[in-house]
Image 1 (cartoon, rainbow, N blue to C red):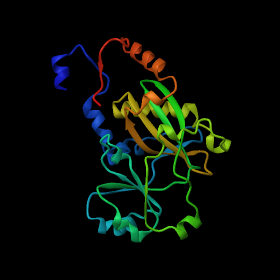
Image 2 (cartoon, rainbow, N blue to C red):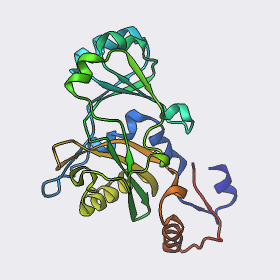
Image 3 (tube, one colour):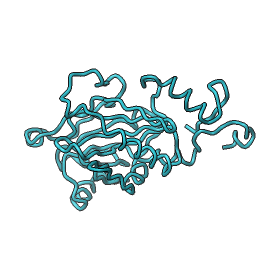
Image 4 (cartoon, rainbow, N blue to C red):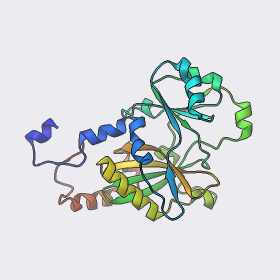
Length: 249
């Protein structure tokens, strides 16, 4: 902000106060929950979730009062760009919940065929890639697993599933009209132009999608054709790739 006051000729792509909205997993999905994105037969929603600020011993009671169903995905509340903020844990049983480390967000796990869609937004451009995600959880898993499973960072670029031999019903990308509507609505509500959406499709329900995370300025360099897309984006702003632009991230 200070830099832009001194250098008003520099184009600020995304204002810092809007970016800060995505640094908290509680606030980042609030905009999604308020959207009405029913488009023909598709439905977009967020998993039921619960924020725990402190006192891990209170988590089982809070989960029961909220009516959440195990297993639960635990994510750090604050997204600060560090690898720790992307670490996940999977809690299978109630007795293990006090082992979690607040502040955190607990999300109900949704079976999704082990595939996640990363929807990259660059201005009005949209690019989607498939990434391997957490495997589905079945009744056997629930009966035979206890405790907290710490998980490495999932859906990273190394987990690309774009060329994997997948069931077409799982691999099919979300409908383009739905993604365009989603991108348009979130750009307006968030006041941002450079972000990505992590989206899953509920297994066996081809018309129901869940947004589980929104990330500011993700790893665009790993996205196919990113240079061409960014050049078009800057030109649409009356800039070119040699002129100076700032992002608040």
